[in-house]
Image 1 (spheres, rainbow, N blue to C red):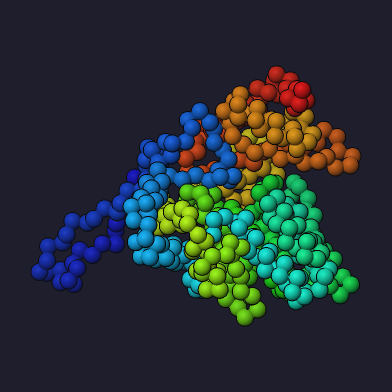
Image 2: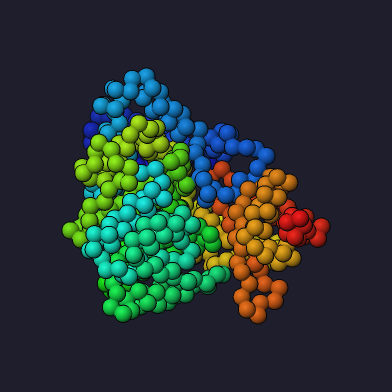
Length: 450
């Protein structure tokens, strides 16, 4: 991409055009080029069509170099690093995140290693509410049926074990509108409040993982407030760098997102936002170290000797994204537009459909796979994914949708494709052609199970 001249320069910096010769206008720095992007991600396996950024993210070479510099700083003189560099560096990263997510105070932002850790922190606090008899046994925690598997396990470990009543919001798939989500969510809250119970916590995804859908979080948080839900936790593992993230607009009590998925950080780093409010109890990191009792942000900044470099490179990541036209907002917009275009191309090639309308996706989208592939179980999705990786060099997650009563020849397999700045259209053509080849050869998943 070529840059354009900066037309807002000042030819007469001292305000006197008669006595100063106009300076030559400065050109704005050029945006990152296609070859520079290729160089930044040249460590990616060139034999793989990597259309699964959503699972593990990606990290450019310039950020990896910045991470290595932080690691060497620590290794060169650990004591100096601990006493003079670490807290200052993490505070700088928290300040950048606070601005990115439009939080009021840097004190509301803690850095942890991933969204799963953040979920454990919030759910641990809720579990204490039950065990310390602040909540009644049988009070409810509501979560979406699409909730991430690890978060479901955390709810089982913390809430169910402590005596909480867990309600899953059933959601259809494919989806046609947000109204389907809102209707089911309201029903779940009614169920949670039945027999005089209280809904103590609602756990809401911002972008579900599998199947992948952008959830109308603002509307659901508003409903929670109207219905008297004590607290709202938004598990937004995919959100930052992928969709709009604004703490003031969303209005949740707690919100977490990974920065290693869609914000180009190395693994592993996430933020946990905790709204400043007298109603929000003090949270604690589950790994207790010397900083216990000094507030979650300080506790999280030191949980023993470990590699903190992913938490320190956020300024370098900001420099990287600002090399793109429009910065992270421009990246999000182009990723969305391209993934929708590629999703439609694949659906047309296979004679299938998208899993939801384009406005309900961000940088990932679900597409139905041809029914003749015979995907009939979770095991089939694993087998065909391995087959696509090993035989065709395509990395893409597959979702099994159990057929509904009366379905004939219905689509039971969906793929989730991602688009990130390093992807090329050939990645998606490679996937299209692989599926077309399997169909033309009469392949079915039953062949792999043998």
